[in-house]
Image: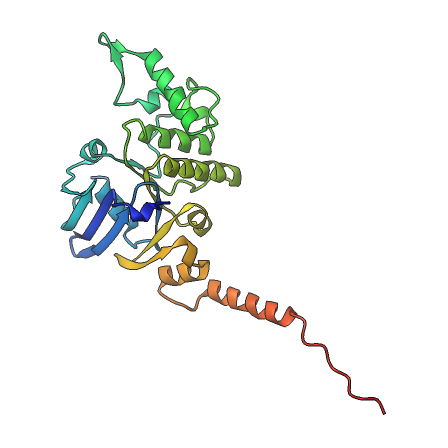
Amino acid sequence: MTTATETAPVLSMIGIGKRFGAVQALKDVAIDVHPGEVVALVGDNGAGKSTLVKIMAGVYGADEGQMVFDGKPVTVNGPKEAKELGIATVFQDLALCDNLDVVANLYLGQEHTNGGTLDEVEMEKRSWKLLRQLSAKIPSVRIAIASLSGGQRQTVAIARSLVGDPKVVMLDEPTAALGVEQTAEVLNLVERLRSRGLGVVLISHNMADVQAVADRIYVLRLGQNGAEFSIDDVTTEQLVAAITGASDNVVTQRAARGQESAAEDEPGEPATEGPRS
């Protein structure tokens, strides 16, 4: 069986550098995203995650390095070009219009027309089809966004990113400020994106979410590649150590105490009695 990483990357960032005045935000950063895999991008505040995502999304241009998409070097001069190329981004603020319904939000700026007028019937039909493919729990496509829960709003934002049939979807902190049930709903969506053969880039501070759905993890530290892990070969302690740059922290200390307690609780060898006189 062919795994995702055995295929050619759909998106590669090679030697990416970005400077804002005197501040070097990114330096020689490299990541690969393969079809049908979830790549997590983690790091502390100021590590350069958002800057890298905005370069991939076309918001910023890289000062150094190369973006390769589907095996071809590309230059992206804006979010519209990134979307046309096949890179969709769901930013943390979602950018939804609360006063509009689900259909209007899904097709905002990319409406279908028939004879010069909006084709509401076609857009509604396609909206239901897309949401069913994602197993989304939306009561009606004609309900205002303001009436939806946080998880449902995130679902609509992700569904909107799929309208143009992208090959890569980037999710910026998709579970931030969500409850347990809503977080599980969004993580299920991430799994469905992977099952559709999309490359998914997940930016998150939540290690539990990352370890639940990611296949590979890139750690950015101080604007550079800090570490790369396969999800099967990394522990929470190793992730925290890579993010903070210190192997001795509260997480590793807690893990060490747990291991010591477990060792103390293990039954010892039964004492052997000597011969009785």
